[in-house]
Image (cartoon, rainbow, N blue to C red; front, side):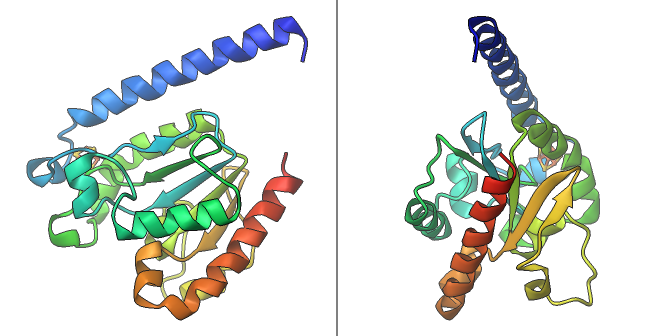
Length: 202
Ligand code: SF4
């Protein structure tokens, strides 16, 4: 990279950091849906602002609500082990949920809540510009690729889907694997496809 290209890349990165920071501040004060009344903290995302991969879950749980950080409970720790198995870390990936506030008692978010939060989610991905996206669980993945409700989620695995021209891989949510540890081998298959797709898209 020439020095002028280097300067441009640095300036672009500064703009992205500032924009992500300012959306995060808007989210902190957001009351566009009822979830604002019951949340403790908003949960925006964590990791690199220039990521190779963005992992997308559905909505924060109790630990996330308390700390304001995504994937920090038992499920988050399992996700960390998957990342380190494939030599990935938060300097290379970004982890987020589509919905930024915890639904009470971990109920499914309502369509109106998803709609209200959609702008933040789309803007985040637009700024992060990942090479590949990974949907964590049916609901996380469903924010990236529309799903036929009659089709088993497992049928989405092993295929490269797309969200606005970015490749998308489906895998299971770590919370599901905590309940069904026998399925973990399938997650490893999905990570292989994820890394293969990343290699082909760099
Ligand atoms: S879930 Fe999204 S839209 Fe609803 S209050 Fe939280 S940040 Fe705003």
